[in-house]
Length: 427
Image (cartoon, rainbow, N blue to C red; front, top):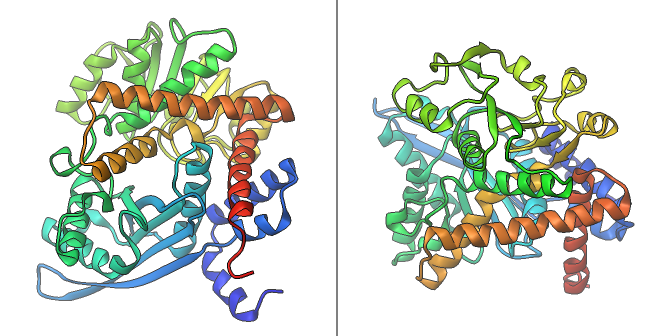
């Protein structure tokens, strides 16, 4: 029976992202007939931290920001997950993201639990000095709870490699010696890993290749549309182009561009370095994000925002395969509808797992103080992400369910086995 105080606490977790994660866990539990005690434990975070982050601004005034870190589950290893700076960050959102990190790390076979953090702040209105002060104070507040063998933060929305450098330095200063393994996503010069920048896009293309192979097809000659041309989308486009894929459309915040014969992706990447946006790229015509999603292509790769394919527009999707480069671009209800239409979706929990896999490599390299070349990292990334996809494909075939349901079931099954082996402390 839940206590009234616990129910009061749960009010802070009422967020669509967390509610959706709970539904995924429950559905996966039913599919594999999981132990109900295991499912009950997986529906609650182990630890949720809320910290005050005071910062002296450049004008001399002190502003206080709210920071969060949720350590969801550590059955498989240290907590692992990003830190985001965004003005709408809440405890509920962070908890939902932490639970999804638990599921992602599990399905990928990584020795990590799930965690996530964030600060409710608009980073764009902060100066460099203010952002550094914010990051260092936040790290100090979390100091007793993070560490290379406890909880390993990484970049997320609104944060980057510089943020991780400040976090690593702050933690190291307070420990008294260098601790590069406390965060991942750092610059290479202070313990970051080669291959990290393009890892998510490369992993998505590895998954795409395997999905097509399972359907007796290849990337070569396939018509591809990619929504989002940031770090993930641009690398997914480049690696697809290098494999002979015909990328006919891409988009960013300025809108989309289309060329039925295929865009010259290397030239587009160079164009963006000067012009910042895809709009106006020579040899292309403008297209809206909505029209891009509805193009008659073989492959659609949504690599931008969550929820872009939902019940209101999923009936317009004509692609035969959807590879989720972003987090949650296809809603659960839309997934079911697309599955009924015969459209296969490579779910985000695997398809965009390249980033956390190479973050794992970074952590291992920091721990060993021995670093690998990029080719070796890419080969190891391929091995892990394809093994995970194959396990999910097998589950999908055995249970007769779509790949997202199979991925969640595979993840929960691995967590269940580990939790039952470790038991409950105390008895």
